[in-house]
Amino acid sequence: MNRHRVAALAASFVAAFALGTDARGDDPIVVAAGADLVEVTGTVYVEIPAGFLASGSAAFAGNVAMTGVRLETAGPYELGTTSAILRHATDVELPDSSSTPVHAVTQWTELKLIGDAPIDVVVGSTTQQWAVSAILSERTEAYGQYDLVRTGSDGGTFAGSVVTPLTLVFRRNASPTKRLDLGSITLSTSQGTWSTIDASSVAGLAVARLPLAIAISATLTASTVQLTVGPAAANAQHPGPSYVDPTAYVDRAVGSLGRGCSIGAGASIASGAVIGPHATIGNNAQIGTGAVICDGASIGSDVVIGSSAFVDSDAVIAAGATIGANAVVGNSSNLGINVQVGAGARIGGQCVLGDASAVGAGCDLGRDVHMGAGSSTIAGIQIAPRAVIPASTTQSTSLVACVQLDGTTVIKALPPSSWSSSDPHSSIHQASGYKSVSTSIAEPPTLTELLPVDKDNPPPKYPPSPDLADDIGTDVARPELGGTGEEYLEGSFECG
Image (tube, rainbow, N blue to C red; front, side, top):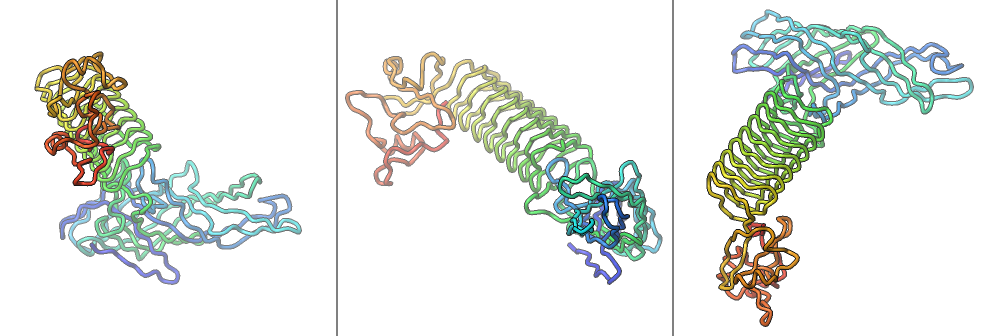
């Protein structure tokens, strides 16, 4: 990609604004009604009458060097190094390269400058230091216009001006804040250049509700104000998404939008939500307050994610699904169309839930569980890893992983009243010829817990044969591998 570099002359300022455009060779370029994201530096001539800042203060006059304040990147914006936004009011189409100018209306929507150093003001026999900033005046429309000319496949030249109503703000410790209105200042340029978004460093940034518009390089000057504006770029500390649809709603108090994520049309991201890098949020999806969507997860159209829910990395949730508040969906799990997951339920990693299946509130599904289309579980039960629930059936009892006396691993259906993690050696288990283990998904059972129960001959510290280790799904504790028998099993054999 090309980047337009324009050397600033002694009396010039370089401005590069980003225009979201559609350019294909010499095809027409459409400049969208949207945002130009820029960095700003410059000088403002400050003239303060005597007695304005404090009783007995002397008059002050002089140029103050200023730098644009970076806009907050958490919230609806992921703006990189942007410190100001110009907005284009209407779409503009530039035909093949020609000398015919095309008119575009623009206005400032965000602009705040802060002095690089405080100014010194004499007050009687002392000198006071006052911090100076410049902001857009309230209730004043700041419109302007560009006359754009296309000279190549991805850019051209322009001339124009933009009205910039500024108010100076003075602050010093506990002293009252002072404001001085500079009125509406017209900043003009006659030798500007512009480029498309793809040909600038603005590519990859995003603004909720606004597409990106152009990239201009120009001199913006007036008698009292001179500004250098350049294209914003990605900020390594606050990287932005690859796309935020103009119709999406992203709350200003959102936690973050990760690098390369995509927010679809009509989607809604609530306050405190976190969207991870390269995650995809489909059209009209709703992400609740405080929900977390991790790296690479894919949320389909019309999906509803409840408040404080957690969707782990690379999980896929198909269209129309509903994930209840505080629910957890494990990494690389795949949830089909119109799946329902109740509040507080936990779906282990690599689970597959068929279309229209339903997991009851508070259920705990182990890793690699498969639920057929239309199947369901009642609330509050636990399902062992690798269990299979057939299509169109309802699982009403917990499925528990057990090791039988012959050393084979099975999954048995038991009512919750018949087993307890606090009493794993209960007479019910021994009488039935096996021992069941109940433990949370977060804490896999130890190898000793999974071995057959024999009070007269305690289990060894390692599996009696490689076959048992293979059944359990781990190589830990085998003497030839240096294991001790105290290690936890891998997550693929967590018990429900």
